[in-house]
Image (cartoon, rainbow, N blue to C red; front, side, top):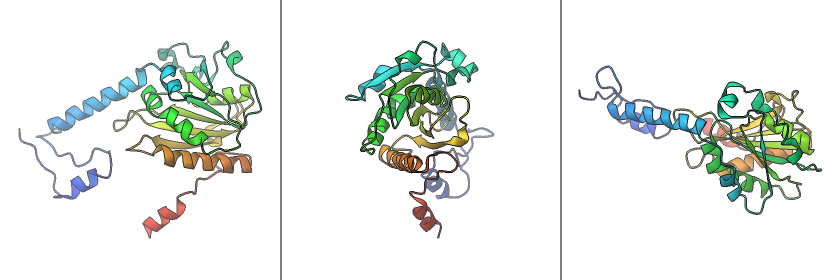
Length: 252
């Protein structure tokens, strides 16, 4: 069956060049063209692989040469438990708390597998290095590599270590357009069981070259960290206005 092209001439190719969304794909009879159907199935397989692939702390540590690291686990003992019990992924494994060094830290970076170990393996080390380079004078704790971890596990880790601020770099839930997206979650003075998502700032879609570059993300993150420390808070009361003018200029 021959493929039917949607109307619009050169409009659809121009739009598709600006987004990873599946738009203007045309049809073959009542279905998608075969090549697009196969691409969709491949994207679905990549998303499943990202969720179930094991975390490899050695891979991340190899990209953090010169920086001390500590390895911990959440209370979720395996991947099926992690996926079925989000609450356990937010708590430290009882025996791992003793591994964390206590100090007067300004910030601790937590690298967590989340829902895409692939994203963490590919992007987390570079983000730690780029961000730490923008924090002169900050007391940065050893980087914590956390397995079977949710974002809120960073609250428990920072509280146990005595860190004033925590940055959790975590693999985001894979979509049908991206299976390697890294998120960065910033929280000031977190308290386990009390801090909520409204108390955090998030940078999403860190995945060059198709998403945020490391340099852009680290610049935004370091700016938020500095402003958060000045204000003594993060979350809904802390806004990223670093490119506010550019957005307005584009709209006018």
